[in-house]
Length: 299
Image (tube, rainbow, N blue to C red; front, top):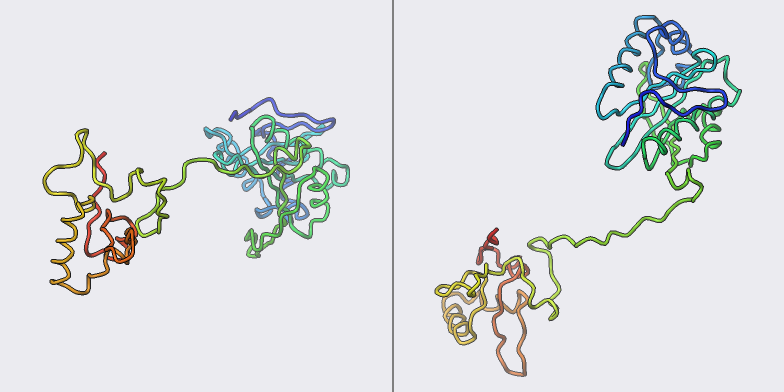
């Protein structure tokens, strides 16, 4: 994502440019006007000192790499306002724009032209995907500017800003890159990546097609096969050995009688035939967590 500093989009009447130190007094008259400050997220810049601090912060943000904020002067013969673009997220390619004009240049279509230049900067130069703008809901000319540049209303952000001790709502408008290009709203793309690993305790479907896949509790296999002497906690055991161990367990503790059957092992293959024990899986752990210990897979 590029960060232009000098070559900005130009309109039929307006030019975007970086602020300069000699803009101080002109900017203070604009940003200090109560009619302008009524719709800004900052208090009126009532003195040259406050306006100078604003310009200094703007210059500092312009040097950041990567650059996140473009607070640009709007020139129409002389400085008539500011056009702003903040990058809200680089990974998600999100931005927010704003336009503030000197009151004597209102109602000339300049706000719409400035917004179009900002969208061109956002989508063509910075490769953003979604751009939003917020307006004081009482600012009807601002809402019309959003509609003129084809932004969609998305609702009202309650108490978005605290300005001069007062909470202010903001109407939220937005437009995406396909919409800006005239392609309309594009459907979301389904995610086709590999599913997440099941967590211990999440039931897992016992499908014969998955029988050969490793499970969370599978033993680590060496090239020659499983460890020979004592089986790991979750290893399968032979039917005869299992029956003997089960009978011994029944004598010691009658409460554990239905451990394998209740936990989801395979049932009897025929009428009257006892169910054979299978390897312990995550389902079993949820029922008898105190009986087994899940062994971590070797890296």
